Image (cartoon, rainbow, N blue to C red; front, side, top):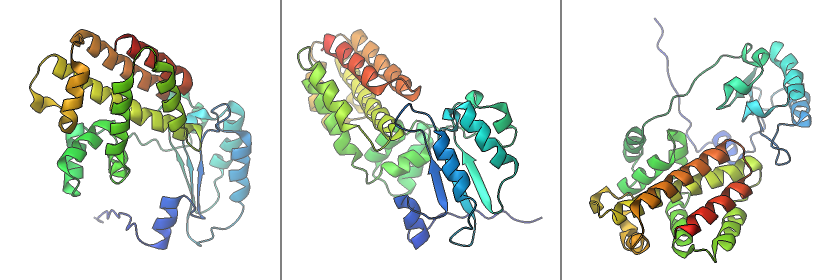
Length: 283
């Protein structure tokens, strides 16, 4: 019986560095366009054209299609021909959180691998084993939404500084500043693509929900040891003063709902503006 050996990337060789910087010559990444939030026919045609040539590394080539469910039927049918007769030495990865939205003809030609979410405790322990500071490990694990890789990538990303910026927005929010803060958040989170913009909002809304959760605990006069953000407890206590805990719980749930709406492709500008108005009403 042969033994399966798992390899991890070294992160140091030229190939690894190219992957990290997104310029590996034999890895193509396709994602929804910022215009219309769909994978365009042109993007699929570019992939098909590029696959006519040999891998520059003389090894395997990889095509990663993010949010593969965002292909128009026309694009999906165009890509189907390539899936039916794939070029030699090419591996396709179709990533999606909404497999039921994809064409059955596409799914039937793929091997489905379901990735289950890890618990926050599991991710936290993984990070600590990688020498991440315990307080940071806890925050990253809470924000990772069950994805260990997302949590690992947060180390060295300035997440604590980002949390402080989100806290500053919460502290300044009122009925006169809601439009300004919404605009600031929208502009600050604009990425190179619509997917990157959504990811940025997703992280910030996660941070906001965790902070609101701690403010709620302080408003209830709960044990301070339960706080996720104990290092800024003083500022959180200022915000919690005189606010109804039930109202804070509702605002936390509304923030999490806004996060889900961002994930469902609802326009970020609309989601953020509505949320800031609701938060400001109760500030």
